[in-house]
Length: 249
Image 1 (cartoon, rainbow, N blue to C red):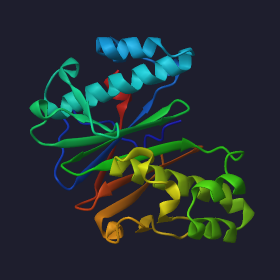
Image 2: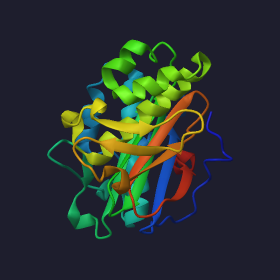
Image 3: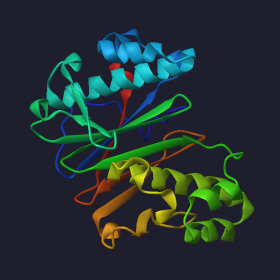
Image 4: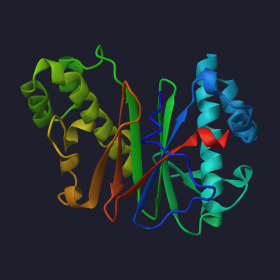
């Protein structure tokens, strides 16, 4: 499912530079679960995992948190169990200052057994991944959540192009919301992204910030067949590296 030509085996040690954007991918389905990922969770994380009703959700949550701890522990040069998280006023997770002298920022997304982990140094970042499901890419949903300019752009396309374009638009918008770290405070229809065949990924405008298009960079991702993905990062360098977390088992 994961294209190893795109998503490389990580080096033995991994480090961030200020111009770098690192994105990790992982299969977090039940069939790919690793006991190592589960064992390094905190007691609170294990308790939360146990509250999921369905096994696939427990596995996805446990795998995501375990892999995140392994990745961050590598950047910070500490044990995965020593990674400690905090949250901003809108619930966006981050690292506590005491263990994060280089100001690493991260974001995580998952969809139907696939997860992405985005990392930068001292720049806010957001990431999204979605399984492409034609039944979701409807005019009703587009008109409910997209900006009017985006709805017009979507339905100017040929019908055969619309499903992929819908999810390109959706993931770029979700990644921007997550980069901003404001949760549902910023409605999806209050800003506009570029998408569709031939369009360079970009934030075109945001009603609450006239300088947003210059502040944020949008990067398109190719997570796996049948998935769309995007990462949005504060402008300052887009030296993209894409790693496969399978080596962390």
